[in-house]
Length: 358
Image 1 (spheres, rainbow, N blue to C red):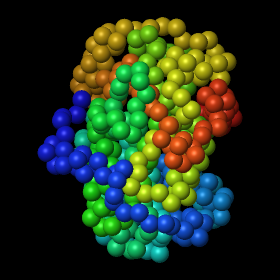
Image 2 (image 1 turned 90 degrees about the horizontal axis):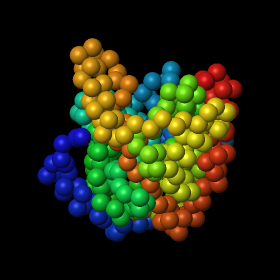
Image 3 (image 1 turned 30 degrees about the horizontal axis):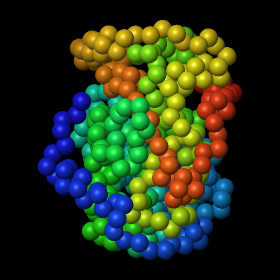
């Protein structure tokens, strides 16, 4: 578990209370009439956003660090620029002439990654981009955080008013990045909207492939009874939610964008098994045993310098409730997920198999 948030982070937390309040409010033009910058275009969410807005005819610019990782379908028809969030001197040309920024870039956490590496990108990098955007005259900034900043809760779904309780280093860095975004945007008078995607999945998602493979190979086991919750959101629904937020004319708001409802881990995993047409996993490992196994795996990994097959953060993800409410986005944005879990998992499994990922 990451160390407690420091004093400056507590200041950010208090200032983040203004996100539902009075930062700055101003109307904006539809994204199709102004240049749109999307960061993180080599990532899963960023790349799907880029395809969506390219197909919609947006005047689109993509920020990437490594052009070689850009999806083949984005190699043409969009403007691609290089830049580094950790090097503010590279960001001026990136935001020049841009009207709206969707900041989807970020560093994902993994076992053994120093917190400073996450902080450099997810916190300081966000500040660098906001300051560059304000200086260039950008009119609106959408910051993609994560639902995980709330941390695991009980069976009652979490909403935007719940106190933050980030568990992993990644979630902590995203929370601090969210707070820094609010603080700096207020300082430079840049209208800001914060969006918190939940457990995102869909075709071409490299991050959920491991879960599908474990179920396919009959290696998956539940930690606990499998009744803890998660809120899967199909990628197309998430993209539509972000687009609704973009076109809403709102700022100084925070929205959770998830699936239609929380589901149990058992419902999710059995749904994957059904989509893959394999037997449903039934093995259950008590949570205390899982924690012991995870500590042992981490200790062995430290000695042999390998990635552990099981970590404490994975035990937390599998055993605790990560349910979220999207009622606020429904009311304010008209957000309504259209792809149910069964259909979304079917499409995802079909894509994985069709592209020989499984």
